[in-house]
Length: 113
Length: 113
Image 1 (cartoon, chains in turn purple, cyan):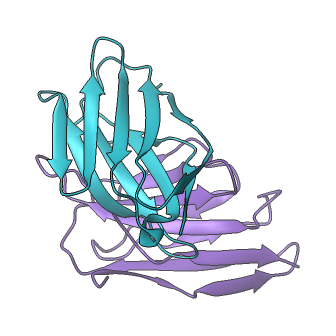
Image 2: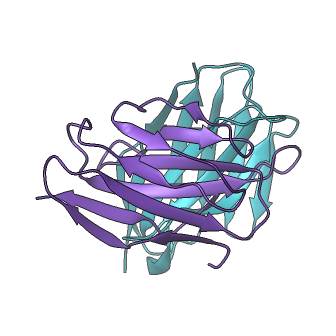
Image 3: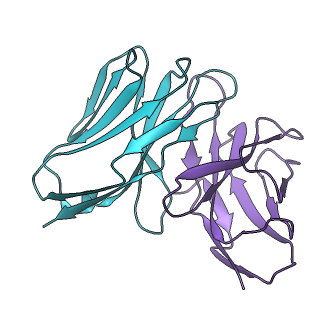
């Protein structure tokens, strides 16, 4: 299970607050991803990054922001503009090229109080 | 963009019976089809994958089949065991360079002892 970590495991946020979720990987993967998981809706892509200092919006980017200042790190900020942020957030990473399997972190469960 | 549909959403089988989960995809350019298993509260983990140049792949009790013409692929689990109980996700993507993976909505499999 090592290689990609997320923190914290549980996070509580008051309405109107921004919160940042951490994702770190030591797999030397080029690409990193953030997904949101809601019951019955599978995994939906929020943002992804192929290389340092570059990232792209996924299918549900509104209300979220990311940065990729280091290859190992891809933090996600859930802003107050995200109307329904309570969900399970999963970070993943992968190589670019031949091997395109995604490896997932353990997830962060965010609850808005 | 790609659309992946997965059925059924829930599946109950008796221990020792087989389980089949089916997925369809819309983008004929998709050529990589992984399956992930997610136990309750844990991260999704890759259990098997198939690339578009093969029609079937087996790994012990699990197998995946792919019909490119019909654009559907299936996961088969034989001799099910209680530890197979989990949510299973299919996915589709296009290999090479950046890979954007589209996930199905998941199938909750319950194996009844």
